[in-house]
Image (cartoon, rainbow, N blue to C red; front, side, top):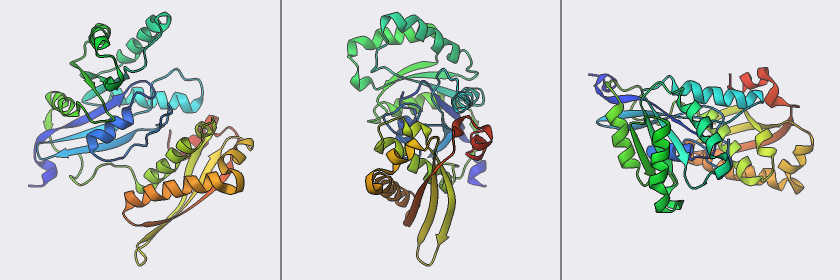
Length: 305
């Protein structure tokens, strides 16, 4: 019998929540390897990223999603649409919240209403995951659990630390309580359905977020224009364009004597080599496409529509 046809606990699980709650960190922790890019800045994830947790007894297909937030620009609206749509197409939902950042009292009611509206759109059994509890005063945990349990009928509320993978075993157990028995969706050696080109572009974008502390990362897109494998040299040559919205941003991204761009390229090449398990020649250059984040045709080229 084909292993893909052998019945196991299997299903699709969406990881959703506000920006910077730790969704990508949690997915990487559950996978035991890095698939989603992670930065300290909110709204780093722009599209659905799929990761597959394989075990002889189960297969959990995780979907990392962009952060839920009030959006007015086309790109941001599309990011929120992707996240909300993901909540309706799965077997289970992990609704993730960062409990280390307390909400000011005057904004608490407004924040609860916003979360309630998002939660009300879930169509599958949901687990509330309270992340970053290692940074929380333990006396505040029970009141938080009571408060969020009153907003939505979650199957369970699970405190954990995604960064330290503390509490993930119990989370897996709770997910398996929800998932049906069925076939595996993906081969056991496939940690993701994302292409190497896409993952390379995401790694480059991650380094832009990490290396530049201004608004530039939010105005940057990465297009892989060439991805050529050379089996004889066991090398991959990648040509990538970093697309910015304004000419004034080029100098910031390139840096004095090209140092910032070189630093981004060196850091990205190192991570891409780890991912591909071979040598990489990475060539980056910078282009300007005015207001690309409001250009639906270009957003389609980036794969957001």
